[in-house]
Length: 429
Ligand code: DOR
Image (cartoon, rainbow, N blue to C red; front, side, top):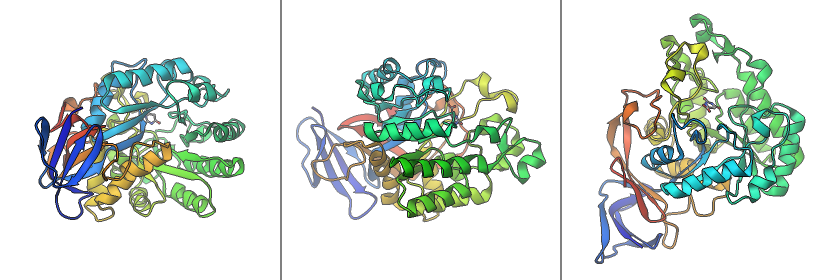
């Protein structure tokens, strides 16, 4: 097995620079280890060493839409973004609602070997919201599915959601809800508010999200189950989560980088690159997302990386698909929105991008402390460097980034998966 010596990095951006020796897939020594014969040395002066990031929410589009992303291209984007594990959502074609599809995705992830790819299983057959999928078969399959979600669709039927939550407790898995009451979002195009009204979009009320989150917190508590809430976007949802957490409900929640940065001000452009589900919200919501992530009501950042083909984005707003790329820009957006304003330090970044998501998913070898003997799933970040986003230069097959041309802070300089360098200086190793 290869050995890597990281020289002069600051763990969690704290304390004095140290040298970190990685051997046989683990952190072998932190301090001043010597570089023996065939050790690869990384000059990491001025850089921050963090545990590798874990994304609970990504769309890899395989099988079915390999024209927009594959497990391989998405894994590359993940490794370049500092990720060592990702969860691939089930809304593929065919849907990942059975053992064959989840095992395919899992195997493709293993073959690619750049990041641990964990398939998410669908809660309902075909994401149709009518019948429960065979959660047990997927959980016990080779893929070992541990998160189930109909993401892209809400499990709107309360009885079905109740059954899924009850079933999840006996299987020891987690249900992740895309919270959107469909009766409240028929024809909805953009966050219901002053801007949508002014620019002529049909409104998407915050209550569509909040009412489902409130309902599901109550159902989860009743079932004694854990619940995970995908892509929280409104102030009211944060209020509901605070209430539920205070009374001991076992609920966790994620926020996307785009809901930490972008607002419905973007509606003025009419550019569907800004169309996303849930929609970009008002300024006060974005401010609340940042505060809630800082104080822990929101547990973690998840990208909702959603690649789409040019023809599905470069069209009129109503016909465009919702979603935006996120894997390679997530860290930079978290630095811009959370670190630069002083809401999180680097230890906080490790918490929301690595430790909490790994805990929520129950991954034993991810999000671990930077300590001797721990698995070497790590990322090196240059906090002083910056870069300019160019969609066509990202590793994803699709190029639908809302940050096109933006200068962003912080560069991922290397990612290591079990001690193997997967990305280095913007290139796949
Ligand atoms: O914007 C989104 N795009 N939100 C979702 O929930 C699904 C995703 C997709 O699959 O494109």
